[in-house]
Length: 474
Image (cartoon, rainbow, N blue to C red):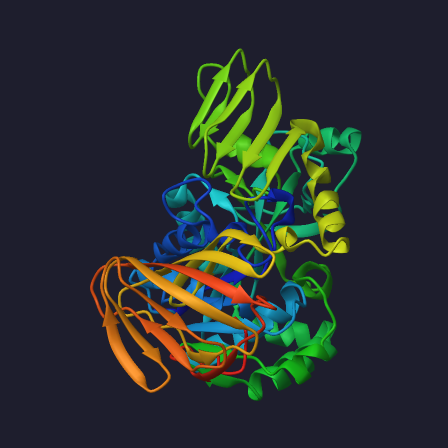
């Protein structure tokens, strides 16, 4: 049986779904359309393909522990988590995954899917994938074309050529068209939305990449050869990969190869590229509203209202998006949500942390939530998973007080190691080596009060770390 390796591309930032999706915790890591994150939904869907091996994931280095944890929650032991030091678009990312697949099986077929898409009918997708895998055996490079039910201007299109089906030669790739052109595309029936999902033999893809974009293949292969294994991850060499130019699969290979075919797919697909498309992907109530979290509305219609941490109310609203998080609120007409990216750009230019970080920040040991701060003090709530451990560390500019709210903590402070139970506290002076561990079987909750002249996360010196982060601030 053909060795089939799902490849999950998880490198996007999802800025159009700000404030829920942010650079350091983007939309693919969020549970937006089900009880699972979009990454987990993608992994589960791909796992249902006949003969599928555990997935190969290509992701941003900053997301590595969250990606690993979410796959572990599905009892999936991935065939590789490849850490991109820099985003270089899909052609190099898939080259890295193909090289990894060939390490594991010289006849590998890869099924490439972004981590942040919704497909309502997973069974229909899996059946289409089975057809595509058979076509890949004959040397074809297959892209899935989404049957277009409406003239969308936010998607690229693929025009099919003449053929007997079920897959057709690719006649043309078209960039996002204006509305009047998109309407003609849909009327003709010969155009599909470009899904960004592909199936081909790993060796075949690399061969075509070598012919049409040899510089990308050379840089990707050099970066892969120089990669280092780090815990559960394959850390792609930064120097070599930075020499690779940024290019999509479409431009690098699919528009040039003679063996590209498009396989129609009608399975409730959406790329969830904006708040309006997320609204369309979710079931609505009798007033056309999608309401999530602690929300109360009156005389409100066709709105998406999302609450994360408090009661959100709306009166007399129509066709609007309202999203609340612990540190930001977005209100926008549904027909203006594409401009959210401009807000994010302004936040970045202003040096605002809200462009990249949530108030609650996830770490391999758990998370911390910044509850309050002021001049020379900061209050955080730490949550350590069972078995979780902060690094053995010290700070040059701040002292810390820890109060255990729930669970039991094992504390290292200087030369002392001791246990703290609920309602007990301790003090860590400036310059002291220290660590918190959770030796128990339930989450450990701690209130941390920082005081000092400088309270930034980069005032940290790591001496030991269970997660390979010595010398970093992540």
